[in-house]
Amino acid sequence: MCGIVAYIGKEQAFPIILKGLKRLEYRGYDSAGIAVLNNESGLNNYKRQGKVSELEDFSAEQDTSGTIGIGHTRWATHGLPNNVNAHPHISTDGEMALIHNGIIENYDSLKEELVSRGYVFKSETDTEVLIHLIDDIKTNEKVKTAEAVRIALNSVIGAYAIVVLSKDNPNQLIAARKSSPLVVGIGKNGDFFLASDATPIIEYTNEVVYMEDEEIAIVDRNEGLRIFSIQNQEKTPYIQHLELQLEAIEKGGYEHFMLKEIHEQPRSIMDCFRGRLNVEDGWVGLGGIKDYETKLAKAKRIIMVACGTSWHAALVGEYLFEDLTRIPVEVEYASEFRYRNPIINENDIVIAISQSGETADTMAALNLAKSKGATILGICNVVGSSISRITDAGSYTHAGPEIGVASTKAFTAQVTVLTLMALTIARKKGSINETDFRRIITEMELIPDKVAKILEKSKKIEEIAAIYKDATNALYLGRGNSFPVALEGALKLKEISYIHAEGYPAAEMKHGPIALIDEEMPVFVIATKGTSYEKVVSNIQEVKARKGKVIAIITEGDAQVKEMADHYIEIPDTHEYLTPLLTTIPFQLISYYVAVMRGANVDQPRNLAKSVTVE
Ligand code: M6R
Image 1 (cartoon, rainbow, N blue to C red):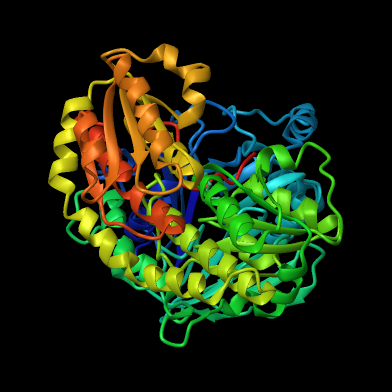
Image 2: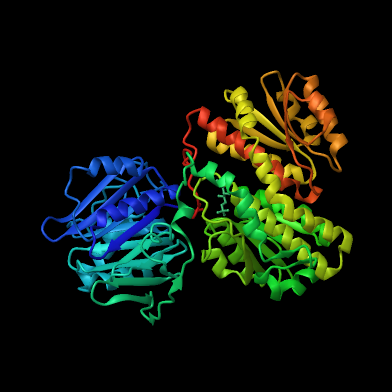
C-alpha cells in the first residue's frame, strides 16, 4: 500500500506534497515523510510516526522551502511504524532521497551484499536497500542517478513504485514502477506531479500518464517528461485526460468519507446502470464486454476472484449468474486461488472484482489464470487501474472515488454490474424469459429511490446502533443471496468498530454459533420476503428462544417479524435478486454509527489501508 506524492515545478513543493499525502492517507497512515531540495539549505527530510497531521505539526516551524520534493505515507510491511522506518530514506552521504511503495522480495540478499561493502542500515525496512543500491551503482559505475536507478531495478525482485530525488540534479525526479501504481501529472506551467493515484493531482491538472510495469519516468524542468523501459528503450508517453472532479474526492459537508459514500449510493447505483439499461426498450448491455458476450454465454464455467468486500459481491454474483444463466460459478479468494495450483484452462472465464483494481492477490490470481490461457475479465472501480489494464475486457462500476477504507458504494456498484452482466448473458443464452427479464430491469431502475428511502431511516438506525454500541460480539444471519450480505455486514462492523462479528448462513447457526447466543448477543437477521422467508422466521425463533437480541431487516409492512424482533428496520419491497442492494444499506449505517459512538477512526481504521497492494 503506502501513498506516494512528488512535485517539481515553480511552486513550493512541501505544501503541495503535504496536501497530496492527506488525500492519499487512505492508502496508509502509520507514518509520513517529505524530503525537499533547497538550493541553499540542501536536502531537508522530515519524517514522523503517525498521521500526516503529525508531520504537518512537526514541520510547521522548519525550513520546508524548495520547489522539488517527494513525500510518502506508510503502511508498514517491514519494520515497525516509527520515525526511522518512515520514508523518505536517505543515502549515506545525504545526497539522495527515495520513497517506495511495494515490497522488495530479495532485500535480504541485496542487503547482505551492501553490508559487506560497508553500507550501514538505519531502518528495518526493505526499502532502504534501494537507496544504498542506487548509491553503490552510482559511485562504482560512475553513472548518473537515472541510469543507476535503471541498473538497480534490474537486480530487484518484487513490487515497487519509487521516486528518487538527488542533490546532483535539482531539476529532475526519477520514478519507476512494477506492480505498484504510479501516475504522472502534467501540470499547466511546466510542473509535474507523481502520485500513487490521481487524487492528489486532479486539483492541478487533468492530463496524466499511467505508468506501465517496468517503466522509468524522468521528469525534468528543462526536458519535460521522458519514459524508458528498464531495458533502456525510450517510449512515447500516453497522455490521458481525466474526467475526475475535485468534489468527488472531498467530504462535501459530511463528517466522514464513509458517511458521504453511503449517502452517495442512490446516485452511484444509477451512474452504474446509466446507459446500460433501458426499461422501455427492454434492453441491457455492457459496452466493455460486448465482444465477449458469446463466449460468456457459451462458458462451461466462470470463476470469480476477489478479496474482502469484493469477494462478498462475487458471492452475490454467483447466485445471480447461476440462477439466471445456469452457468456454474466458482467464487475464490484470490489469495488462496493463486497458491493452490487451480485447474484452469483456455475454456475458462475468470472475472476479477476489485474496487481499487490494484489488490496484489487479485492481480496475481488473474496473471495465473492468464498464463493458463483463460479469458480474464475485470470489474473495477478505479479507471486506468492495473487490473483494468491487464484484463482482456471488463466493465467499470462508475461509483466514483471511494476514499473511506470500509467499502460501501463500491459494493453496491459491483453487485449492480454483476446483475447487469448476468442479465446480459442470460438474454444472449435465452435462459431468461421476457416477463422475468422485464420485471427485473423495471425493479432495477427503482433501486436508487429505494436506497434513498432507506437512508431516510438513518435516525432510527442510529438509535439502534446506540443500544448495541458496547457489544463485544455480533452475529449476522441471512440465507440465499442474503448470506453474502450478512458476511459483508459483519465485515463492516469488524473493520471500523473493532467488534468481533460473524456472518453465517442462517440455517448453519444451529450447527455451532447458536452456542454463543445469550441475552448480550445482538443478532442481525435479514428476514425480507422471499424464497427463504419462512425458514428465516424459524431461525429468528431459535435465537429468541435463547434470549438473543434480534435486529431484523424486514420488508415494509411485514407484521410477523416485526412482532418477534427486538428491533426492525423496514426496507422497500423489490425483486428478490436485487435485495442485496437494499439490505446492505442498514448494515453500513449501523457499523458507521457504532464506530462513531465508540470513538473509532471511521475512515482510517487501525491496521488497515484502502488498497492492499502487497501479499
Ligand atoms: O480494492 P479491492 O476491492 O480489490 O479491495 C479488496 C479488499 O481489500 C477490500 O474490499 C477490503 O476488504 C475493504 N476494507 C472492505 O471494506
